[in-house]
Length: 221
Ligand code: TIU
Image (cartoon, rainbow, N blue to C red; front, top):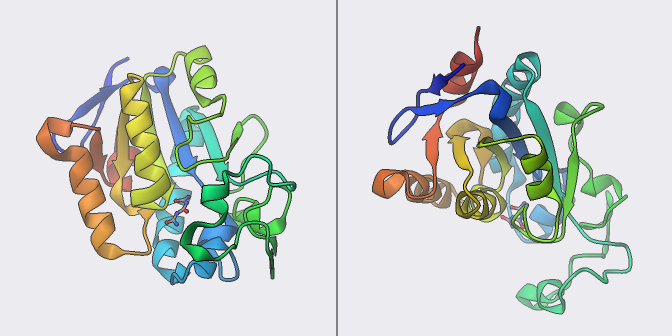
């Protein structure tokens, strides 16, 4: 059955069976103190506003039976999948260094994992990605194709880095993406504003933007 999400620049038609919720990098390393985000000099409290709206959208998506996918940015403990240019970016090495939540951005460490508030349940695939985009060097595209997915609801952090990189990758692969604006967070409020404007400008050049309440309303029976 075709449904609609209220969204900008115009309503988005979707079908529950071909829609997935993709939650990007809601990891302790980005949203809690002592992780990668803070090591880069950011105030992590700014991105925590996305947690509550993500909880409500995750619940609605689970209740509606959508495919739910979680992603994590991070690297192998031996750093063999981390480009040297990423490792040394900013003139200082953080990735792989020891922090209060374990080695920063390393798979298997406490800081790399998803926050307890949004923890995946059985049957929800987790995509471990080495880059900012969730399609690069992962099996996300294969999983979406195997589920006949056409529409993505994209939430998570950070808006102008991993969220919109993923939306741009998805758009080029033919997926229709909607970002509920309160479900994404940035360390830079002005980047959040303009990143979302860039998505929906020019008739929705990369996708659609709405609010968690529009997602919940659209999924309701
Ligand atoms: N630094 C920053 O804003 N973000 C990242 O490094 N990764 C994600 O966005 N997940």
